[in-house]
Length: 403
Image: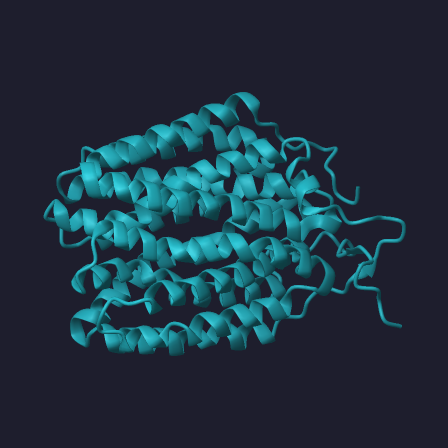
């Protein structure tokens, strides 16, 4: 019997699953490969500058991916709630891979740079929403924050691996070979995703799926998404401009920031990934948001590689804890039948902040320098920390699951 696509569904059977179950491993591995490709574009600002692009042009081109993600994510969130997630994950890998290789043949700055970045943003939406929702589906509610943290950890590793390996390929062969190899490697995400077995969908009789807007304005969700936007602006701005900033202060090994940032996240999620589930998502996020804000402000005073390393450590410690906690909080505060929308809301808010941030703060850096840009960025993130500390709420035993 064919199920009505508008009928709410549940994945609640056998909720207590092993943390590292087969589907969780495949989802995480597929996303790991996907994000190796996606995060390798940390090197794109260097290529743009090499071709004569200014800091503001870098911000524009890099920000186009964020804009596309914002525009496509709500639709993806609605569709995965209706049709399932696996094939959206498969499609995301294909789109990203096939729009990576053309960069190998672009020797001048032209309209294809922002156009291809638009496709990258759409691919990110397809992958992140489907994979993030699948992780929630195949994980036990009591271990959800930890599962999201581990899932995100393997994606975040690529903030170190992708620029490190990518830089060596560029130095040894060139950008052309780098983009070709990156695109081919990215196809692995497609093949791995095909092996995933999506949990059986069970119709929830009598329950109606909420609209995207009503999910946003649920109790506690709106404030959390506002804060996600604020810290998203800080995160994307830092990640985008660190390679160029490092060159301006005479540090050639810009990858040191990404390595220390990644190591810090690994440490937090391996040894402290259980903290939000045990003590509460808000209680864990508040000090992490504070540390994150200060790390960005600290970048304004960095003048050598040691300062860059220290900033990377604290940036990673803060981000490594609050990011999965805030995602898990929004999922906890949303009905199970709207889980795809909940993940989409997190993605849209974080990415929207990133888009606005990289555009706006890029102009600040272009006109007044990187130190002022980091000071303003960090100060705005500090305001986000205050908003969440005073207005945010935590999930509790009376979650909204199955509501």
